[in-house]
Image (cartoon, rainbow, N blue to C red):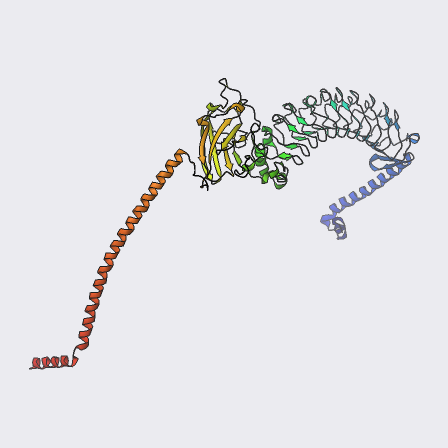
Length: 612
């Protein structure tokens, strides 16, 4: 039982009488209101046309109506009208003249082929107009002139092939236009002119291949634009540059193979989500995204991307969609690996390696950084991330671990937007004046850590040359890297290592200067050769060996002295103990031989003499 029933079941006290009076009056009024509504509903049923049902709240539903039976007498207070499963190939002019209170009109799935101008005359309060899932082939000019209050217009799943300019110009309050799944091929100038309130525009799954630069002129508050599933070959940069409030741009399932540096205007300050899935995308300019400072979501799944250069816009990215690409896992993706490691497990599985073969089928985050290398394009080296010599039996593969600079205040994330260093006027092909020092230290028996200092920062690319008496190998480092770990080197082998800045003259550099190079050797001794060391290390080893010999000699002398002293003290103690033992032994023997009876007699005699 409810609370009201419980209260009525009790015997009322005088204090509760006013409360019960109010409750009974309220219940009585509710009963009268229900009866009045039911009576009104019955009266509306009487006024409904054949095939239509008049429901509460002024809702009317008509089913299986043909054009000849189009209802002409409907309740004037109707606010929602729905036609379903009807055969209405044409909506004639003046079809809804007596429905001035209508706010919602459903004309979906009625086989409509044509809507004549004037069809919506008198519908001054109409806000929701559903014309989707029909066979409308064109929208004639002036068809929406009388529905100026419409805010939601649904035209999806029709056969519309063209939109004449100004066809929507009378819809000044329009918020949403849904035109997906039609046959549009182009968007002309001023197609969406005079729509200052338009916020959502759905143009997905058409055949659009061209968009006029002035197609969206005046749509300054547009928030979401959906152009996926069309035939665009480039980003409509000039058309969308005026959409300064745009938040979401959907361009998936087009044929956009390349993103140029001017793909996205700097005026798109509020663009947060960009979708480019399944667009056959092969190349992305390093300058395609830096202007998008508010970017949060970037999805480029199911494309042909091999690498992706770092962009400053990626610093604000919260979600990367990068799966389904043929990623080449080398030094160009070090920054992406670092970014992925900060994400959850789902985000970390977005990037899988396709090349080189040694990494194929691995997630990028599972490849150690020292194996993400970039072989030189100008030298005779492998195109994979491992640099090998021609003699595979004598020289193992080598790898490099690139570490971003930190000594001179640079950020921890390397920049991959590389550029070619300018050619100096003195035409020094090795650019030796830019390198001040190269330092090498042994890490293990098969690795060396290389650091270098520069005089001025004029570029982000360097080539590291290293050899051990045979063919020269090289690694190209990008992103401002100043430290490289060479791994899987020969044990106990001496290496000559040189650092050469990247430039157009690098192919002519045959003899780097001494300040660009150094010589070092991995730890361990090879079985067939004497280790080759740097001069500084030789001196250190000689000094260490001398100190070790002197320490050993001092220890030996100290041990001899201690042994001598201990031997002398042991002999003296032994003789002393022997004498003591003899004395004690003799004393014990004398005591055993003493006659205690004679002693007693002598004592008694002495006492007697004293008494006398």
